[in-house]
Image 1 (cartoon, rainbow, N blue to C red):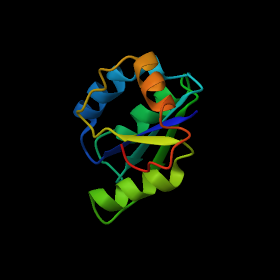
Image 2 (image 1 turned 120 degrees about the vertical axis):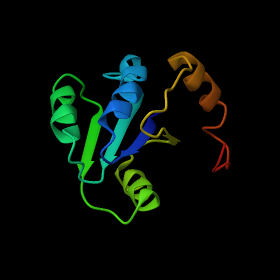
Image 3 (image 1 turned 120 degrees about the horizontal axis):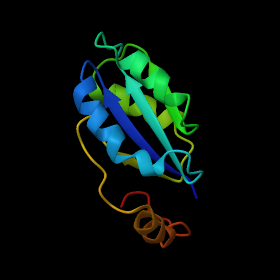
Image 4 (image 1 turned 180 degrees about the horizontal axis):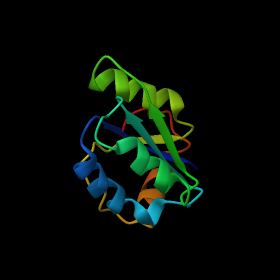
Length: 116
């Protein structure tokens, strides 16, 4: 099972760093991927993400113009390979334990449910 965490951001590196710090325990775990969709920020977001990608093999970074937050979220969905998607905006923190997410979502893997 693969869980995709999608974060959209534009010119909000300070809050993005808070989100990323809450996801440190998920990085380099083959059960998770973190997709960051950046609307061409001008605040060093790109260089920051490029640096952390070197040490974390499950960060996918997209840096392109978009038509707003929902367009950016849809780009993240298109890049996603996960069985489940979690949207976590810049500044949000994921506080649940890895094992709790996996055990909760495993219950739904064989169902026809599309939204939880």
